[in-house]
Image 1: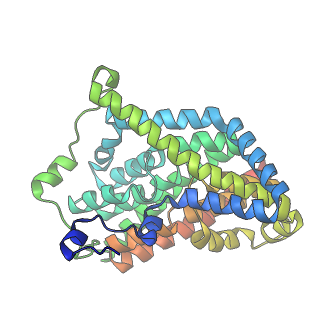
Image 2 (image 1 turned 135 degrees about the horizontal axis):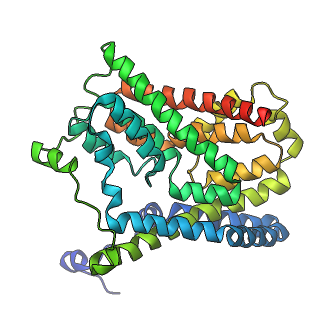
Length: 355
């Protein structure tokens, strides 16, 4: 029997820890794998049907997925995604309008926008235009618009874009009114790092975009890398969402959905706000899920409300916001998101009834 000395033990690589490996594993892929394993054990026929549903759904949405991936790579490679700060220059009222509009069109998710918001606030940008951008940005971007057109329809995509702009304006001008009354001063938590004056100055003056990015090898590589990253991100989340949708189509009673969130329930839109805030998964994953619920009888206006209510309040994003700003700013952030989603849902329902 052989033993090792302490010195040899110290030189050996550490034994793998399954808990550490689990923490580092891709949770989306783990969820997909776990779902398929459960289906193969409990309902093998449904597992095959769900895989066929997934393949057909991805094939139908492939052109729109390709467009969204290429747009993300283009924005990163050209440097267009660094031009956000320009939207906040000028008078505060004009800055709110520009910030809401830019936010509704910028390719940032609810979590990816957090570092940018921290830099803008630390650079001295007023909280009102920042709030407008913060609320509008995760609700819509070129990627989501393309996916929405393919999955639900152009009318729904346009409605969500208009709603993103409206919620951004509501948050921006609402915050401006609160600040005018003496509230929301010094929004950042004391523990949040504040960049130096030089860094702040640079953050508000990004370099000009390089539109012919393919002429520079580094930018061309950046385009390939970012496009690949976006494609992998979208494929994982959409695959999980389509698998869940395949089960909803089979196992969720359409009558129950129509009764709970359909046109016959006078409280469907407020209920969608209450369900959307805690239950939301991901901006892209929610698209096929909402599409499936609409097919089961849910009103498109309620689906829009659900997506808007959760778009800025998904658990990862909310945790990041909580860590960044003081509680009263966080409360205003949640309130504007809920009120905006509620108003947008009723407005979309009125437009649908009028049309």
